[in-house]
Image (cartoon, rainbow, N blue to C red; front, side, top):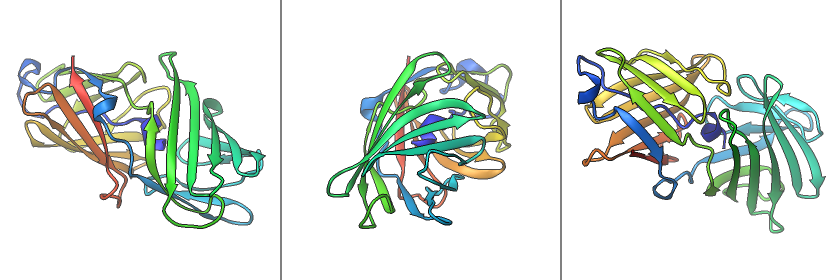
Length: 261
């Protein structure tokens, strides 16, 4: 799934004069897949120009591509290549600036109502990943055309660990070791640059404190909103919940739960 591979999100630290030791966000947080829910989101394949298909999921990703073994630009610095391997089966390669990010296989069930996508690749830290997404048909009656809803996600490519600190009052420094991604800056609503080998260029995130234990955020690519979310620390301070959605898709929220180590 696009958002999970890109980056689930970065957690925020409340702005102000509090030192790191006083902030409930400071520490190391690890994903709890069993308590998380990455289903419910939808995307649509429709007819594009000529014989191509068009993909759209409400985020900054909206593009045409062919199922002909050729490389097509998708979003930011990404490309995709689809090759038919059977009547209802395809191989897919995703790249960023020519570097392979993942390889996958897509299969449509015999009744045309279930779409299964399997992806493999290597994270920036050198670990391999294997994700399987199963989608059920919402609309459309033939082939790939139609709207599909995520019904099952196995081993999602979400950040495994966050490390949060405060280098100075009112500032936050965050790292995602498995993604080799980081950011630093204030959580005052301004856009903060995200850096990491697999992140697209011109990617930013803006945090706004709602309460000392709740933050809202917007992830942008080239200034366009790509994902919106809220993060809330549990009453016992031992975990936080990240609820996110694509613009205009507030009824299609995904939830990631991180536990303090």
